[in-house]
Length: 622
Image (cartoon, rainbow, N blue to C red):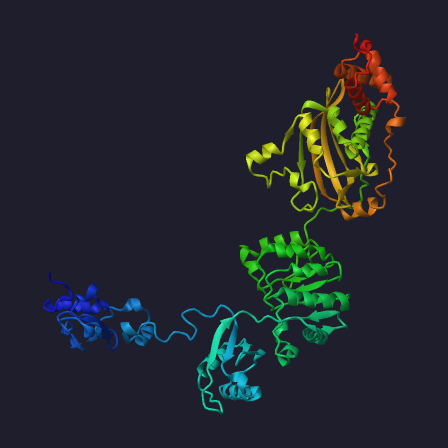
């Protein structure tokens, strides 16, 4: 079959094949020869009309019709094309095309960088001088330094160490790394052989922070601190002369190095006003968070770093005195389409900020308030009327007395079809015993788990209470707000704090609890109960942490022993007790009076006497 590469093919088809510039092989040595085509042209080449451009000069290097060893040698074809029209315009401008005037396919790939087709991923290089540990170290370093200085290249070895018969160190200069690579087997030892030198890209060297290293950091920081302005400049901290003299690589982007610097600030510069951490390749600010309650920082320069996430900026919220922040030339800025969106997001995280990236921020838009308006004084208990307030006061007092002591006796407080759920916010302390039982729908996405954590029926609810940690509520912290009151349904919220027993320690927790209860002739029954547990605020901790667990805090809510109930409430309790126990109203009244109208205690006593068969038969005669 006649083809482009047949020897007897028409010359114009051969010329078309030559123009492709492709090396051709046939599998399994079937090809009688292989070619590598060279295209040499002067100026702009073109296939002219009626010209002799089809003529090709062939320089055959070797030819073996039977294949064999020589069949894989190349034969070079050079095509000379007259420059009449520019058919190579797709190659780019003329100056670039002239740089490609003559090229060979088989040479493609030559002239690559010393370290492969990709540039090194870091700016550091580890150098190994094989055999240098067996000779005088100063002679080796001087020999390398002299050759690099002759090339106007700075030679600064970092962390010189002995590894077997070799010396190893790090350099951060690309030019120095390239020159060291070229010195491989150039410098000759006095005993004869030439010194092999290996250069490889590396991560930044790890520095163990012993006392000598900490002293060097302390000295460098001391020279960069200005006591007059109370400012500390740690820009390009790794290039401090103290570290170069000691051949140390101190990188604030490393957690251990940053912690060492922050400890020195915490103990020695508590009055720090301004801090410059620019050009240190910082990627996050988690370690920096520890300074929040130690120094009153007003100005912070984080420019020319690698901070990418806006959440790192939110960590600076605890620096309440911070008014000037510089985040310029950080990747975090690239996430925003325009400057106003960037400024708005940063100001949401840091509302006290007055200056960002070296520019004064515009004043926030607000509403003029020419006169101060006195807000209403909040009330501790909001109820629609005194009767409802009295009923709810008694209920809340008795409920939390049993919740903190004998939760199993709360069975009578819930209706048969009651429901309960527990909510714990995302940032709640995970060591809390309430956290594993949370039904936070933002994070509990599985339908089956959601259904399991929604408790239905009073038996399931009271059994679940036994799994929760022991608590001691503080009645002085309670506030009650009735948010719904329609016919026999009442919805109200109780907020306050309690102490959670945790590994023989007590933690102050904040809570809010929404109850929906039904009021009937049988009394108060809970239909819905939703409990939210969160971390207490610092103000709550300071206010309520003084009471010891053994103390019984006094409350404005009357205790069951001193509760004064009106006759209507007592009658409702008697009717409810008679309905549940099966006794007549006379014995129901006696049971409640014996326990000072404490409904749960009277119910528990009734169940015990009934199990012991100590109740008289006339108690059940109606």
